[in-house]
Image (cartoon, rainbow, N blue to C red; front, side, top):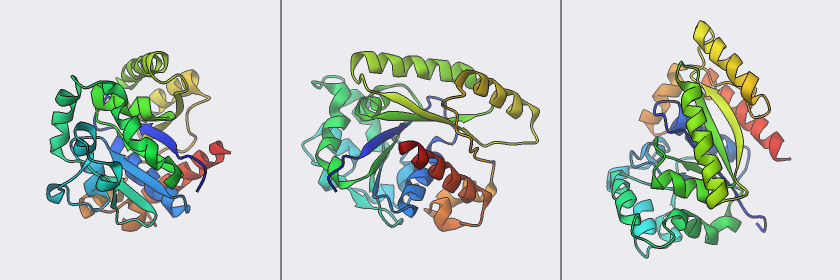
Length: 257
């Protein structure tokens, strides 16, 4: 594979917006479309790791060791339970990385340096960012080609989005001039809720070019799948959640040309 992987950071500083669910299931759906994909769990909660069947407490090497010691990227990559999907796992130890990286040289580009040697091995690298705008997210945005933003249709959504867009602009200006917003995806979409439609309309008015047509519905099966260590495609491919992520991935791939 000569072509370099495209790196997409899945980011939103608000928690509980379907960020990790999107990272897991977009990665799985890319793999399902025969794209060799790497999922990078950059969230100390380690939910992306456990969500693809990796037992985080049993890990001896993970992202923390690559960021804060001389561990190489190939030492930390593991196979997920999904075909063609590899994982750089994490667990709660990653919390210490934010503190330890503060005194390191080029601290904002540690993740970029880790990923550079393996760009030829994958078509897509998806980074699940923590729900904050700290050093781990800064590293993800510096390493990424683009940012995909999951959004829940709720009252404070636009406020949080403005903050994230400002952060992306700052990173673009200081560290990563080619960074751009890949798209915004509406998650946990409840079509019976009036507010959901109002927020969706507001987002369409402001971000019509970047808003994906596909919306991710509220779906019980989608909520259940991570506790079984499976993507929604492995857990219940007949569900509305699986159908939505396959559709989103088709829309995403069409944009890639």
